[in-house]
Length: 144
Image (tube, rainbow, N blue to C red):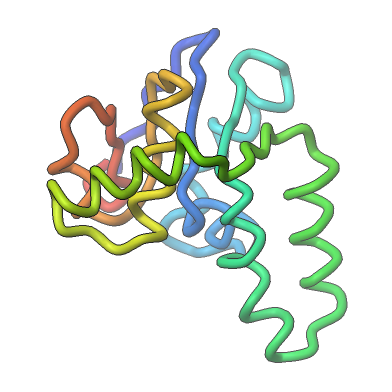
């Protein structure tokens, strides 16, 4: 198993599974993510994501009625200092272009467009489909 390459000063974009793997303590992927959260906690890197993560990440805990998980997700999303980026018209136009060009789903296009608009130098995901998007510095967890 390798290690995430996250130089100090990196602007890191996280896709929704990264948050889920963290909060669910995923046995395969959480160990890989520990350096991400340690560097974030030490203010060595900045973490960004789209506000879309709210809708994607909270579905399962809300369906199951797991109040503790809901609180944990909300704590990390809203209060830990992750930069939540609004979905504005420019993001939607860029996402539309990505959908047309790369034939990806709307949520993936929004995440990719948001990361590209910010100029993030790392995009952490576990979805290999992001690898095809030009200008997106993708790190696939399962390949580390």
